[in-house]
Image (cartoon, rainbow, N blue to C red; front, side):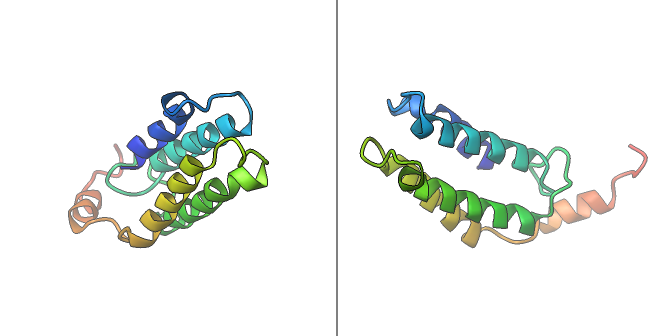
Length: 118
């Protein structure tokens, strides 16, 4: 879900017609890129590099959600657009609070049996 969420954040200014080139545009684009990088580096089923513990990933998701939800007021564009930033931010916070804190048992078993020399 994180990959889809990151891509949606990056595309949202154009998809939802608020790509004016200011903070309203760049906040979701930058946060989307951070979400994608964080997901690539998280130690879970969908991670590619697996260096960030899942608990740290979820804490960063919550912080990202807070920043995204408050960004229209922090950066002064709430008079033009705020709904999607708020919705995406709240989604990130709720997802971080409801996601399992540890990878699945199948993932743990697979990682435990991987050849460390690969």
